[in-house]
Length: 280
Image (tube, rainbow, N blue to C red):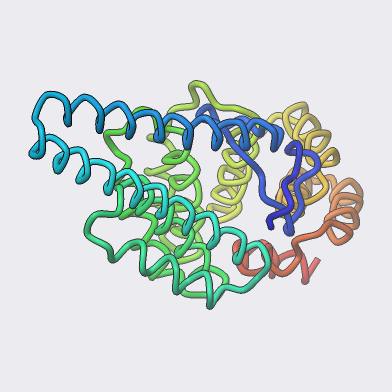
């Protein structure tokens, strides 16, 4: 059973955070309510289709309804498998999670949204293994799958920010800048805003320049201090302060960053700035 964080501030590397369609972190109760409504709605739809088609088409209608119901059940089973894989990833059982995720991507009838989510999860596993080329391929595939789905804009944007970070790790700084500058900021919730800030700071680190206003850096530091994890944001803000000539402030932020959870993940996801931190 996964342990849910109730807000962005409470999230740690060992919890699952529910993020809604706007990229806003929400309490676990809202996730459970969505699951109940989804399963209940599917059950009602199956009953209605079976009754209606059987009445209108007799035996043939009953067969058609059976095919529809089978597809619904397969989709629900696929979502359940994706959830199990997420729980395994949180528990750092990446090998078992990978087996489930590869199976989902390989199934012909798996819904495209589930395939995209599975590819994102596989990309995260690849990153933790230092396989950034593989992660980039998976992230790009996931973005393509969601490119025309307006309801999946939040998920797509999360993956796009993750792809920017991967491009930086691969040394493709110009391409990362091109991708980042092409992303709009409309309708971003708290989780997406943090991910955007991290991606932008990491990109500036890769370019070895930034023009952030001191007030913006202070605002982001206040946000980062309120998070139980996200050490990368603190480290990147420390770099920005050093770049601006504020070494003392940077040292304070680095001390706090080293106290946050998620150190192993940070070293894998943001290796370049972690090398800088170790040398500071």
